[in-house]
Length: 184
Image 1 (cartoon, rainbow, N blue to C red):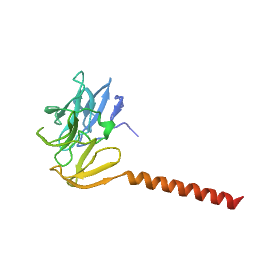
Image 2: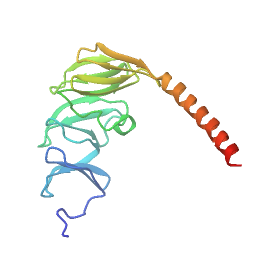
Image 3: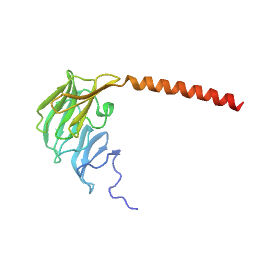
Image 4: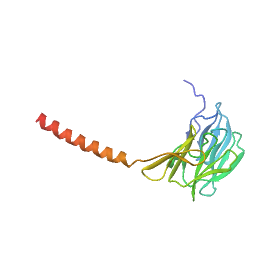
């Protein structure tokens, strides 16, 4: 029933790799599990730590400027990301299987832990790698899984889902009319 960490922050995210992003006076930093602020609250945004790195958006920096930092707060490398992770999903700018993806002017780029671009994918949305594959979306309907070289290993056009949904809705309307007729 006692506070483990005093509620002095405006927002707090779950712990990942022993650190949690917290917000104080509109700026983000990181605390350890004892509540010690190990990376000062000085960033506009902060992503969770994964594979020893976390993405932060420097306060007052360029619109698309992000930086990857180590758990001690030291900079690993900088990159450009043209959307907030929350707009696409919580896993952008977060490392999975040694890579993180960031939206840039010419598509999505996957970076390794040294900050080297290793794969560029010209898609609408790109996701993290899991079990050697990443899901990419070309438009509202077409999706694919790619391997770490960018080869499409499975692709589908999701428009059939909309057609199936329309058919199911039509069948539901017909069944509803039939039952209403039987009950009246």
